[in-house]
Length: 213
Length: 213
DNA sequence: TCAAGGTTTGACCATTTGGTCAAGGGAACC
DNA sequence: GGTTCCCTTGACCAAATGGTCAAACCTTGA
Picture 1 (cartoon, rainbow over the protein chains, first blue to last red):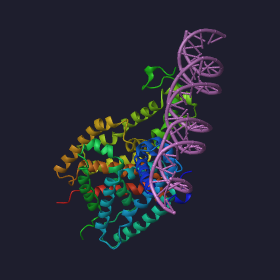
Picture 2 (cartoon, rainbow over the protein chains, first blue to last red):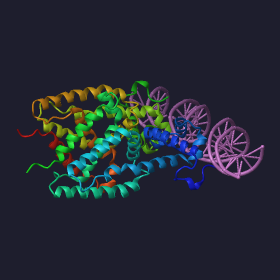
Picture 3 (cartoon, protein in one colour):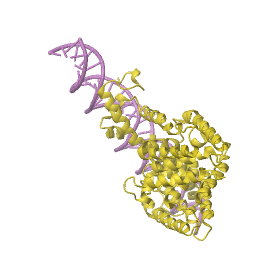
């Protein structure tokens, strides 16, 4: 009758459970990030995971449960780069380091970025609470930090909220719109990320560096 | 047996045809832009259009035909703002005007932006040819214009391709990630677009204005 | 007013989809 | 070696889905 209710949301117990839940989540990430929740099927995920459909449902009680597991996992790591932006650092460098971390994530975890993008574009049905909760709180906190930096003269004046939005959008673009970027640049592998890094560094550095007084 | 083959892709003939095809395309834009192609159903579209499902299929031969009609229409207008960027204008102002036009489109046509985003995130199955054709050509052309401006000293040096990517991503963000933006800013209506406009103007102006020599 | 062609729909169909279940196959611990 | 619990699957089901069709209903122009 499937895995014990107790184990839901916890670490798997046996080796086989560990291996298979990981395979399922990995396969589901492939599929969900490409087709969105409603456009993905259990058969696709099962096939990608190398399991039968009933076997999938032995490990997860339903399609939404798999999706929720992925989203939960994602939301835990998604905000880390922003959390690491510390008020006691050098302002311009702190923000630029954040930009780099985000760009790095777009390169290393494009599927996660697209999973998130799919969720948001489709109205964020499953994570609206987290957006208006954790995320909003964190952004407000960091916006205050940025405003502090501006007040101290270490940063050129900008709207901190829209600054954060522009950091998110420019970096995630390389994951979410990957096929478009590649269709235009025709890069070899990830070669274009070096240029993107240089460009974004220039963009935000010029914007944020306060005029020499 | 449905509308004459001749009329496919052409303007509707009768008043009723015009009214209904428009209602269908508008409803389909609502649905496709929210759920993506595979996540949308004919029943949803029919209901949103106020028609029966067989009636839908009287005007369009299939689900993909509706989607294709939308995408075709979209692609015709999508590149216009970039086309309008003229080599003989004042460089910084030309680019900033382009940014504003794109932001305006994100505000006026968020559904179209999300339709496009859905298509790209899911691997652009239906428009890859257009990306590698029209779009690529246009971008290369404008990249050359920008490089010319830089060479003339009227623009600070930047990678023109990544500049264009950053314009796309920052502006479309306000349409594609609308729920996230609203979840954080809690704006009244479109009030936040004024701030976005000011922010993006600052961002790109500081980056592009050549150092006074 | 009447015929011709345009429009609408209820009933229907094959396929896909999320999900169930009972029975059989293994691993592991005693 | 046997028992207990874990794992796997073929067969199945009800609902949803894209699409068809013949019959009925409207418009329109002569």
